[in-house]
Image (cartoon, rainbow, N blue to C red; front, side):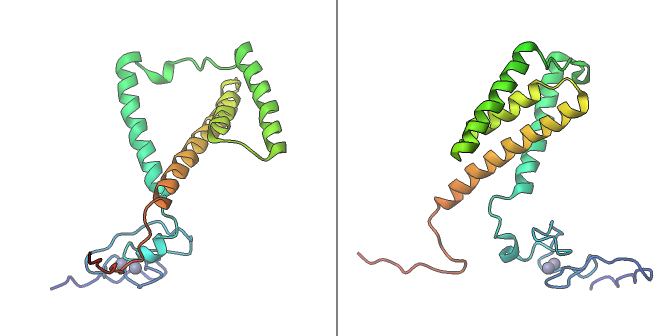
Length: 178
Ligand SMILES: [Zn+2]
Ligand SMILES: [Zn+2]
């Protein structure tokens, strides 16, 4: 026997799945959860793999892995180096600024030739970050660096998925008889 749903106060937004219309009080069976809508059209529950499928390399799953790794490294480095917030940035040395300037020239050549690789893109972002001495600009560049690393990892996942043999959902391949 299900609990009687409490009626929400008037004017209160009740999340409702944009596809099946389920709500927190009246979820799908088996019980569903809210998931971020890849199309950003509204509320969405996880009972709709066909809607979630168009983005096989799940960016949010990848960012979750990044968060988990950041926590793991934070603990390990804190153990070794103490208070991580007290570490100096160590950026903007003459050598770092030189590297950054050279990397800008190199990436401009690559743009002109419309050819690059991930190593070059990530190295470029790293050199630009290492040359910053202004904290907000450094922070911005570090996020650029992290985003590029995530895109690279996403490309690796996408390639791995593309290499899988394709089988339409619900399709049972015919049995081969020798
Ligand atoms: Zn739904
Ligand atoms: Zn649902």
